[in-house]
Picture 1 (cartoon, helix red, strand yellow):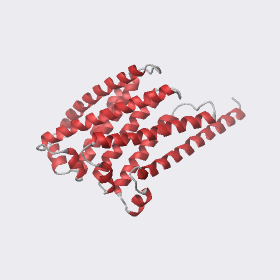
Picture 2 (picture 1 turned 120 degrees about the vertical axis):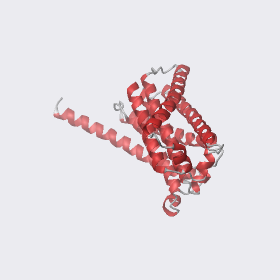
Picture 3 (picture 1 turned 90 degrees about the horizontal axis):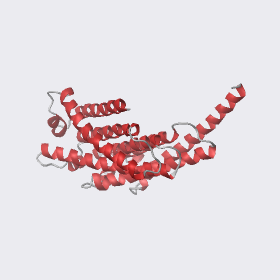
Picture 4 (picture 1 turned 180 degrees about the horizontal axis):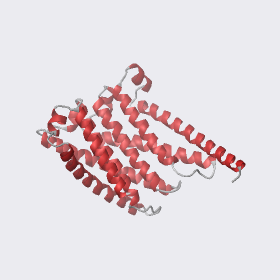
Length: 299
């Protein structure tokens, strides 16, 4: 390849890079403002004047989630033209943005159905904001894995992405219910959602670790399920079965390993009763580490 050819290729890649970055910045900015519009508040007022840390955490989670989805859209070879690149980036980005907002709504109404998540975040509840932010990030991780699994910019790709999104929301609900039941059994029937509403940060951090672990472990599905553009049901069933198996397996494995790594420590007493944030952070590290290792071994 001659110097001119190299120069032309470099110039083309730089233009594509500029297009992708410009669209990404616009979408990330839109996400920031949508955080305020959807709950009918001024995002600048909440972030800079009210110094609402909870709203900031929630917004950070949404922005990071969109960024994660966009990495799935731009990973791989450049499109055949600048226009196709711009259309693809915009389409995936807007679709990801819509799914993240939809996921936040579903998580609010179904997973955390006993509390008003938006109202609590506006009031400055950091615990609920942490769970809200990480739920969005977990959803984005799964969407990204599907973007890398599926091929081309077609209607089939969007169907596959939405199918994985629906399954991810189901898994988040099942995970939340399982953690709620476990919390209630160890705390005389107390409600985990009410504990979060009362500002139980250690509990929020621990639950966030489980959600992230679930999301990372599901990435392995792309190595076992072959993408068939027109096999809607087969793709959906494949992701559903794999997700359920991973959720159960991962939960059992994390429980076992925590007993070994954190031996002689009463996690129920320390985290749930004494609000030990430091120990909850260690639990997150263990949960996510196990999920990442498991996904790597299955790749």
